[in-house]
Image 1 (cartoon, protein in one colour):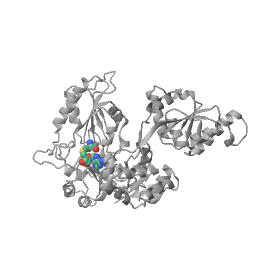
Image 2 (image 1 turned 90 degrees about the horizontal axis):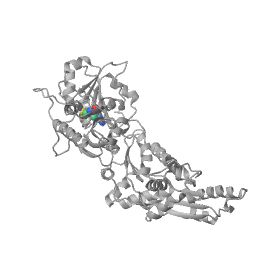
Image 3 (image 1 turned 60 degrees about the horizontal axis):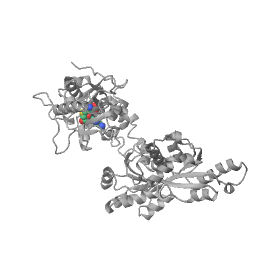
Image 4 (image 1 turned 45 degrees about the vertical axis):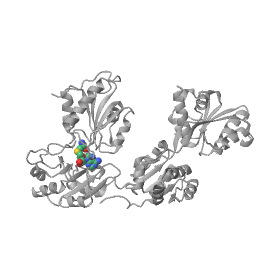
Amino acid sequence: MVRTPSLNPEHPIPIAVLVGAGPGDLGLFTIAGSRALSFAAVVIYDALANPDLLAFCSSDAELIYVGKRARQHTLTQPEINALLVKKCRECMLRPDYPNRCVVRLKGGDPFVFGRGGEEAQALAQAQIPFQIIPGITAGIAGPAYAGIPVTHRDFTSTVTFITGHPQDESSGKSPGADAGDEVANVNYPALAKLGGTLVFYMGVKNLPDITQRLIAYGLNADTPAAVVRMATYPEQQTITGTVKTIAQLAQKAGIKAPAITIIGKVVSVRDQINWFETRPLFGQTILVTRTRQQASQLGDQLRDLGAKVIEAPTIEIAKPTDRKAALAAVQSMGDYDCVVFTSANGVDSAHQAMIALDMDARDFTACVAAIGPATANALEAIGIIPEIVSPDAVSEELAVELISYFGRADHAKETETATLDLSGYRFLLLRAEIARPSLVEMLRNAGATVDDVPIYQTRIPESLPENAIEALQNGAVNWITFTSASTAKNLFTMLPENLRLAVGKCNRLSIGPTTSRALAELGWPATLEARHHDIPGMVAAMVDQTPPSVGPRAS
Ligand code: SAH
């Protein structure tokens, strides 16, 4: 009998959690799943679970891969069950138990061709409390992302999920030890008679056999069919045909696992509602060069438009050389009339210093100023609303704002900004180690006392991430984005000669004239310069430039 999971009242979740990873797109992962991963002391995961999900784990989690790997022993299902039970027992002995759990992370849904049933049985037998968190199965997500509704009032009211794994006729069992192997005993005559929508998992290799059987047992050979590979990923590829032609078409297109095959009249609806593969940047691979934090803002927008984004940080934010002085300055912020931030990085670094000093937003007694909206947003994100924000991220503009704000408060008379007097006012600037001097000079010329304290320094990272190097080497990158002259110069410094040549062959998108000049000097002239020199401007420029026919669109 399956044991009901008994929740320790102090324990957030049962010791073992079988989590469905969904089909790939991170946005389709459940909130419950991400919560379980954040508690995980151990994660046992398969090849089909998107490895990016592991970012939800804490850094001390033990990550155990049990999927197939070339030239390496693959664990059998009983071995995986035993490992799961063993890790749960170990976890219960940890000092941080009951606040930790063991997550078994499986592609799609754990109970749909995932052998999750057997793993839950093994846990029940070992009297280990467990929980099941379903995931969106590939047989639902694949058709949805290919623009194929699995049911439709005009076409069918049944949908059948079937394993297409080759059958072992003698035993009725499927050979191999794939996590997805189930007992494959499929009643093809019944399927051919039922028709409706048929969704085959694991059927790529076996597609000729599957389709021949269906036709032999009476399914109309002209029934529409589709194969969706790497569903929900930016690499998604869809082939359409009929039951008669689909096996050959898939083979010709070189379709490999993982792929879902959909057979039924509903496939024809794709012509009208193929939404995913028709997004403006679908099929484009874009290398985004920036700091990791900033890269995600641009990266997210490009991903939303369908691009495959590879982040290649070319600037690293590091602690300042004189860390003590930075901490002392943050601690004494209350002694100043105004604390000035000139970048989101400065805000992040000050925030980290505040955490180290056990301070929070309430310790901000001084007036706060920010250069431009991005810095203001970074402040708001940590609970600080700046009183003064310059319209653009330009030092001189911010100086004028500050002078007019404080000067007016002091003299309350209508005078030219430049003649306003700031004597007696103390400003603290928390900036980069190498920052332009104009802001300090303008404030001092107006009579203010200014402490300009480096709160961080920028460095060139040692190397690019593996996937970025690989994509450049393989000529797989369509666009590289440059958001400042330093992203260009640093990328050049970080790359060996052969990859510099590879960059020369990609399209290069520049944020504006200064960056374009730097690119030209490096021998990488910008292919395109954004008309509006900001992130939305860059995104718009790329969308305008990408012809609708580019990428693996509707087949
Ligand atoms: N438990 C999983 C299925 C595991 S069986 C689920 O619920 O989705 C493995 C098969 O799932 C693959 O052979 C393939 O048919 C299908 N599959 C999984 N992820 C897929 C994806 N992103 N795109 C297409 N098919 C996928």
